[in-house]
Image (cartoon, rainbow, N blue to C red; front, side, top):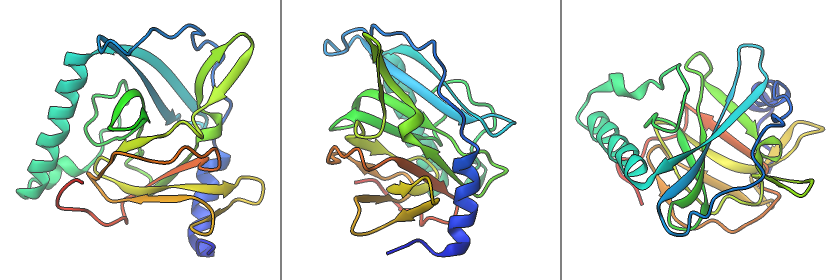
Length: 210
């Protein structure tokens, strides 16, 4: 089923604004299996509508602190403190509790990709097939196909297959993963066709997480 035309028009503008991923992502990624260090990648659209990303390492303690901040933000909203619902416009790392966290490992762990919505836009889409996952030996891998779990922030949304030439996205029969605000999805089947991530203020808000 195709997404309604008015929605597609808004979505297409966001996707077409994405530029090429930067060329300076390190090829050698440290082993995170020991739990000491985790790789975080932050992606956003700059003032020109171009896609930018930066990758850095965090400790287990730093990631746990970020997760605690997310749970505190969720609890604040449930208690009626609506000011916490507005994503901060300053994007510097994955510590923003309102962002969408995508993981390359089941169970919400491993490398993490953090996506934010500019408060000025009610909906935004990111082309995961342009976000660098890893470069090595002259080969570049992108995040589409590597998302195995997620933890939503203040925005609900979806992972979808989109035809980026015709600017059309589909909910079926193509692979599609919808999520509500604050929802945890601990297992997502690997599929390179899930090439787009969407965030929207219009998505329903869930009172809890799964």
